[in-house]
Each structure stands twice: as C-alpha cells, then as structure tokens.
Amino acid sequence: MSRKWKLSQKLIGAFLLVGLLPFCTLAAISLYSSSRALSEQAFQQLIAVREIKKGQLQAYLVDLKAQLTVFSQDPLCKTALVQFDKTYEAAGNSVSSPAWEKLAKRMINA
Image (cartoon, rainbow, N blue to C red; front, side, top):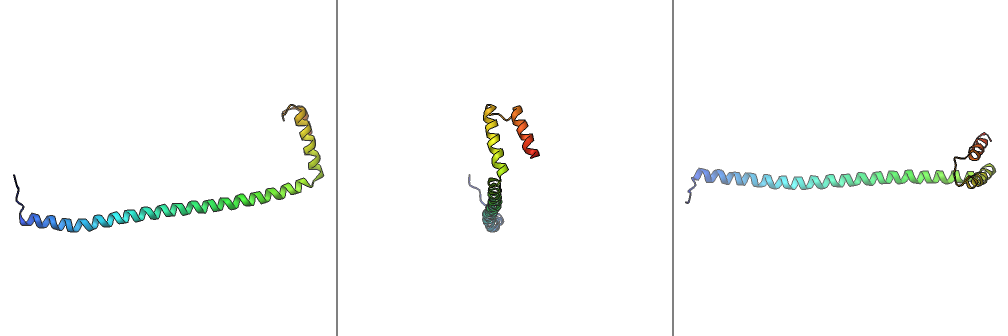
C-alpha cells in the first residue's frame, strides 16, 4: 500500500529537516566542546592542587631538616635519645613501662 504525500506535508517535512539538521549538528558540537573544556578545567585544577601540595611538602621537609640539625647539635637531645633507647630495649621494646615513664618525666622537667 503506497501512500501519497500532499505537497504541504512534503514542504513541512523538508522545512523541519532543514531547520532541525543544523540545530542538532550545532548541539552535538557544543556538547563535545563544552565537555572537553570542562575536562581540561578539572585537569588544570588538579595540576594546581598538586603544585600547592608539592610546595607545602617541600617547605615541611626543609623545616624538618632544620629542626633535625638543631636537635643533632643539642647535647641534651643526644643524651636523652641514648637513655630512651636503653630504657626502650630494657623494657622489652615497650614504651609503657614505669622506667620509660620515669625517664620521660625527668626529661620533660630537664
């Protein structure tokens, strides 16, 4: 069964096709472009966070190195570390012994 289309129906169909085809094409291009831009923006933000964290970590390590340098030159620190190490080993590798707590109190008050 073949159906004959009226001229008005053919014109409406043609105008719809001519009007919707560019609209759909433009919508697809816009979707692709915006998706790519959002991905790029998210990636750039991650890079920025990485650089900030890198700077923070480097500053922390420089500070830690300076503290270790100061502590390594302090005779009280050297003595305390030796005594804490001996007490730790004597208590069976534990910091919950009475001798450890006594030494800790003595070092805090020193």
